[in-house]
Length: 142
Image 1 (spheres, rainbow, N blue to C red):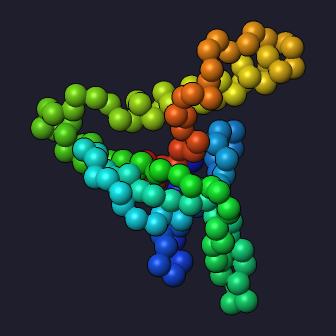
Image 2 (cartoon, rainbow, N blue to C red):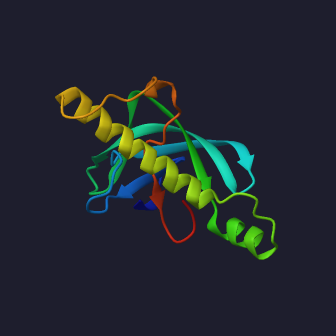
């Protein structure tokens, strides 16, 4: 998983990764536009992929990357801890995220091996899966 930090650029909150050595994912930054759905452990946000460019004042400004539209699920660790303490945790959202990242990485490895002719192909059609693209984490949320 990557650590993350939120930065405010104009009206957008921008999620930027501090890429950990050996971590999977794209290293992409995301502009969180609006919360579209509350969830048990957090919220789902509408977001666009952005590229960060230096400004004349020495800061960074986001520019939208065309056609990169995402749903970002933000899990609030404090909510998860409250549910665990109250005995109401029917699922483990942290384990789900780790599993989705593991699946993403294994499918990418098997696809690369199959394309190179050094491994078996992936059964079924993996493009039909809603895969996790990036996983970012800090002290407060995933």
